[in-house]
Image (cartoon, rainbow, N blue to C red; front, side, top):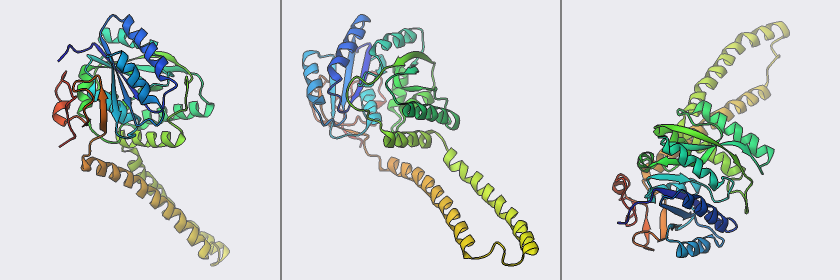
Length: 341
């Protein structure tokens, strides 16, 4: 086995052909300037454009660029997870391929890591090239997560961060299917700090997180790190129970004062039944979401399937997710691993 690189840069790729060449050039310039050894793991998450051909061409010219090619699209958080599983560096950096997170900020993350911090997350001080609605919903999301989750997730942070190998080893053992990497990183603990930066507009292509995916992502974050949706059932049932008890003397008094026909009829009953049914179905939906997460975990399927690799040990072999045993061994190669048993 060759010497381990000092840094591993993990980049999930999904239909990013307009960004890949510039991303590689900027990453190469930044990492070469450190004077340390490095590798870039580009995870092709089932791209339907020319992304795979581009990263393969780059990897053919620079063996420090390593390619993981998924058998299909598994999603951004799973692609990040695969990069973490296969990384060999003493420190691991997560960065998206759209160049909204400037690769030059990696130097600042490394500087903080050298000071002894084991997680250095990038904090979005400004956000350029995004709509007011996107900025407003993002701020709302981060503040909601901060208030209701059981871990202290820093405000206005994404997955752009550096993690020490000690943190990476713990993350490799966390195999839940509905993943929220920034929450998992906060849950792990260790010494953490932030670095402010200006988030740029996307260089090319379209956002991979439209509103629908953002809502699903937020729901994964909430259900993965908080029981608050289940707890609000108690509050709503208490409020409805109080209103029901309060309604009895009010209705009785009004009927005495205005006659037995006041506040009567089937319409009132139907409206009340519809309202109560709506509440019940809503809470059943919340409960079902938690049950679905339990079901996902009990199936124990691999998080992803790798179709092929490049510039890895055992180059271009077809394999699946690393075994649980391989994930627990620090500093070892996971290239020859198979699916979970």
